[in-house]
Figure (spheres, rainbow, N blue to C red):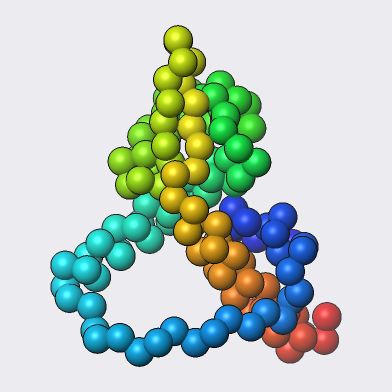
Length: 132
């Protein structure tokens, strides 16, 4: 089954039963902070953006390489790259006429790992309910 997540290659290396320490209780977030969190999740809610992030897990790539890797159009990919860059998820570097992108926020790896791990557990439970 193909999961909608950019971090599948790490799941293979991690046990399907992962333990993550519970988060320390903190004061509730302010409305402004909740808005910032919601915006971050909104940026990551587009499947093509997740494909782009996945394509960058192995390192920096040019726009042309990202177009080829994701199957999108140049214009569409450029718009998604701009959104991810403005959100500080990706970094942009220009060399001559080429533009290169890389992952700027290393927490994106952990976030994807947590989401994929949670999905894997949930789907395993669902499959078990059907005797699969």
